[in-house]
Length: 156
Image (cartoon, rainbow, N blue to C red; front, side, top):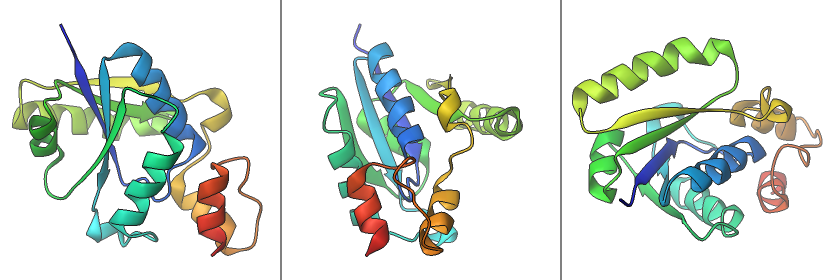
């Protein structure tokens, strides 16, 4: 049985933590669709096309990871790409409450999709896209947290 998983997020920008979770998910599932959310309410730093292109570039080392973008409900995107699993990364216990609520909501919206949590590698538990953006905006070194391609985009 081929299992397709969807790994949704804003990915603004995609971090080494995102890459780690996606790469590990790609070892568990036949196909992982990294789905870049439009998320206009979050006022993303990079537009949807830029975020999708960066994700495509940094994930090119995994042949079973596909990149797509979406607006609207993630469960609709999951249905569209044929995903039966949602992958969510957990950095800390503080993420857990929110993620369980989201998993239960998604299950209510689409009972055919299960959520799987992937714990972030310890070296990425403190890394978030918003922190990376803030460090970069203040002239700090983000090379430890993002791919060189993403770092170059942040420096522009």
